[in-house]
Length: 227
Image 1 (tube, rainbow, N blue to C red):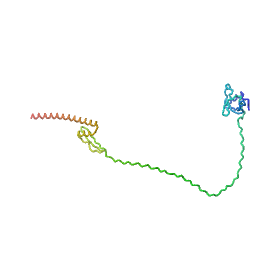
Image 2 (cartoon, rainbow, N blue to C red; image 1 turned 90 degrees about the vertical axis):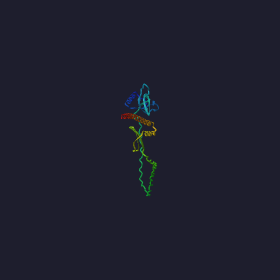
Image 3 (cartoon, one colour; image 1 turned 30 degrees about the horizontal axis):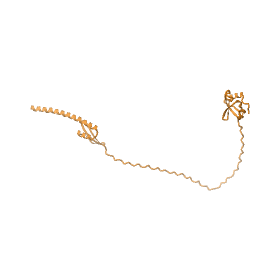
Image 4 (tube, one colour; image 1 turned 135 degrees about the vertical axis):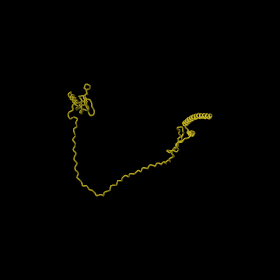
């Protein structure tokens, strides 16, 4: 066991080894205490001006600082465990082969494997939907049309695509009675306006005819006096 610690040259050599990427081994001296004689690796040299313990040594899983007096350069081969020779195991003695005696025994048939029965699930049939009774077709729609055009009122009737009555002329009074059956104020007003216009036109024609008739009668009277 070295007990002198690291010299200045040793410290310089360790610094060069750390710069080259190596981690030199050191052995702990008696001044290191309980770990004396154990081997570690130097991983760093800190500033000696800050602390006397500037040699950081990895020992097991720990990295602890020590002073140069606590460690020394480890001799070659330090920290290696000598391989223990394995004890040779005696080879097993060969056992003599013994003849096998085979008795003729009747073969027992192997039990039959019963295949699992697969039960078929019968899906229930969907219930039939009730058949809706067909509705009988009703008669085709009936359309009655009251129209006014060019001073005449006409009525037409049609059932479906069949014409029951072609447009025929009706009197204004009859048209007014038909419209009275429809309780729609707008329709009544429209019919009344048409009748009022026709009445006014008829009165004008009547006045004109009266005037013409008066002239004809006056002429006839003159002709009678002259004769």
